[in-house]
Image (cartoon, rainbow, N blue to C red):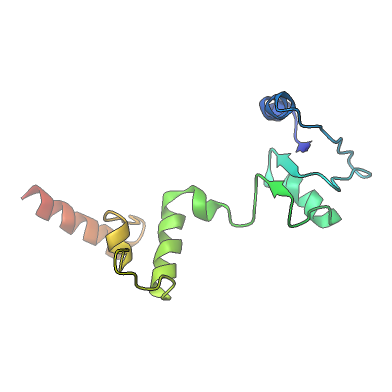
Length: 128
């Protein structure tokens, strides 16, 4: 494994070593992660250095990835799922969800005016 970062990565380093994993050293300018199965970076920017050096292979596991925020926060995940369903990304299944509404509870992006209005309408009906 390779660790890209400072003291904030020490708990991860200790956990990997406890599992018996062997750390490869990354040296700025001359370092390499070739052959590393896991690269752990404290920031996406540090990981980008490995991408630019061409050290990552399809078998390398990393803790940051492009557009990872889409899965990590509620609103981008909601938007991504909506887009997926709208594009017909889920084929009908007799026992499965037929729409996103069958899969998730009512969800709103309150930064969007029409969704804020829908949320307020739903709240008013729910309270009545």
